[in-house]
Amino acid sequence: MDTVLRNARVVDGTGGPSYRADVALREGRIAEIRREGEGPRPSAHRTLDATGLALAPGFIDMHAHSDLALLTDPSHEAKAAQGVTLEVLGQDGLSYAPVDDRTLPRIRTQIAGWNGAGRDADFTWRTVGEYLDRLDEGIAVNAAYLVPQGTVRMLAVGWEDRPATDAEIARMQALVAEGLEQGAVGLSSGLTYTPGMYATDAELAALCRVVARYGGYYCPHHRSYGAGALAAYAEMIDVARAAGCALHLAHATLNFEVNKGRAAELLALLDAALAGGADISLDTYPYTPGCTTLAAMLPSWANEGGPEAASARLADDGTAARIRYAMEVEGADGCHGVPVDWETIEISGVARPHLADHVGKSVAASARERGEEPWATARRLLLEDRLGTTILQHVGHEENVRAIMRHRVHTGGSDGILHGAKPHPRAYGTFPHYLGRYVRELGVLSLEEGVAHLTSRPAARLRLPDRGLVRVGNRADLALFDPETVAAGSTFEAPRALPTGIPFVLVDGRFVMKDGRRTDVLAGRSVRRTPAG
Image (tube, rainbow, N blue to C red; front, side, top):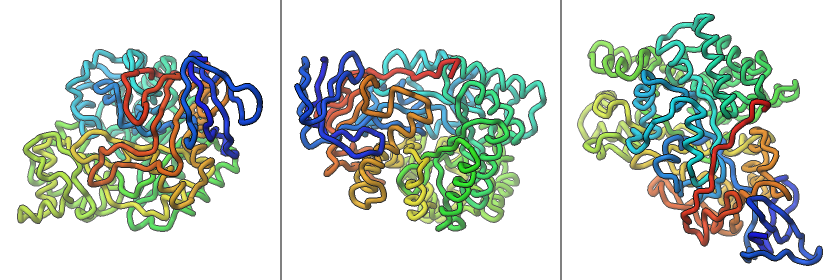
């Protein structure tokens, strides 16, 4: 054997009782599991005494925004230190493949608030397969990819707010099929982001039928997490049902005052669909604030035509007044149909250094310092920062968070945006926060249940038969943590602090974290769906 992990408390990902065992690894896989008292103990070139530690499958982040971070900082300590061994990229309908020379610059501008400008990335790829090939050059953790529907619509339709023609739908179907052929695991949408939000349900169902043929899944950021949230969830269930496609609901929260205490209604909707034979799962992060870009809160008509057109509208006083009315009075679709409360919008990152004094303050507080109305501050930020401002939205409800995470189809996803001076702590803390706060301290889930939510359930959604369980023959992607001390180090005040209580993490049987420190191992690769599914 290459490595033996001795005396570990094996929490195997099934949700069943944990047990004491030695686990032996060979050539990147689990070769033997010898339970305590079962006979001769395996020997190896390297032995680690795991007494006092839980041994679990590596955690799977079902909603990650590390599309550039994995390339510009392959060590990726933010996720490796959490015990994450696989991330799913290409989220919310917007990412960097497939692209052409016309669409790539616009995408880079639009999602700079998520990923930065990517100045250290070479952007030599254009297709999904070429992007995955870049990941295969060496990254800290494994990565799967969703074909981003908004990016595909840019290629086939552009930025116009109109229905796609039959020919354009056919081209989008071909682009989705090509991405799946090259290894993508499904399709994502961002239906509060342009241009993906301009798609009709019929257009989305046409793309999902392609996904279903390849055995993938549809992962929508649906049309509202606010005033129309429950109707938006129901809409996605109907789209997936019409297409015969598996559905995974991204960051499945219920936010804003209008949805306080309404988790039971969402769960009843899911249960009814599941009882009717639907294939549904979801992910959440264990925090109440959300995170996005300030530009994403604009009404969709203000973003039509792309970033340059949006900036021109903001610069025009008359049009800017219309944007303000839509946001502050009507409740713009970018604001999820709820009039914006500038006290709840915290500036977490800026692209231009001269704007750094806004970071860590709400838009309302920053406006008070300047003796102006919040809209004036927000408008200036959008224009001077070239739409690159990142925000936290303090609009969630703890009772909804806890209720949803108990559901039987729930999985964990960080939705972690690593860019910005003051990012959301979920980027560095989601998985230890689940285990420390919601498992150990609050008992919302048992240890065994919590691990299953973070490992075998997402592996099942991804249809990965050799991941997500501590089982002989499976990949040796593993996390060793102390159930008594594991905790997120990241906070809203110190969002990049690393977790405690996760001393060892292995990818492909190799230590990417050892004694709580990042090694130089880059054992991660792309995880690709085969054409046969």
